[in-house]
Length: 69
Image (cartoon, rainbow, N blue to C red; front, side):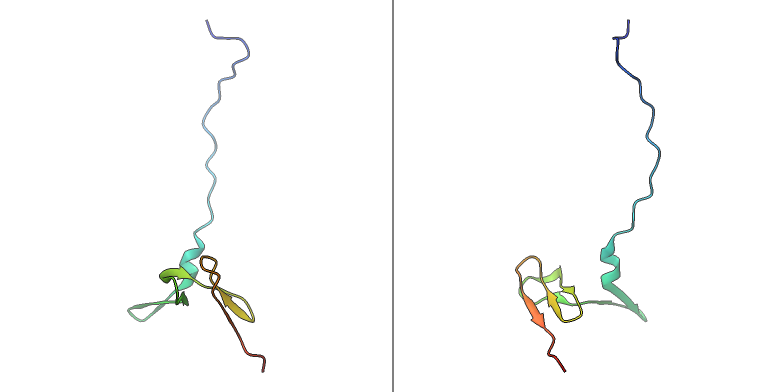
């Protein structure tokens, strides 16, 4: 006998997940894959966040500021 209060559930509906944003950091030029800025301290694989006036590494807190012109 099934227990009282237990509700049998079916499968969940499929939800499309957004694509990873890491692919926006690479560009294809001819037969080469060109990467955006990497952190000079952390090395390859750690991207720098870019804003209008600076670039920033979230791992080691390295930042470069753009000069005002």
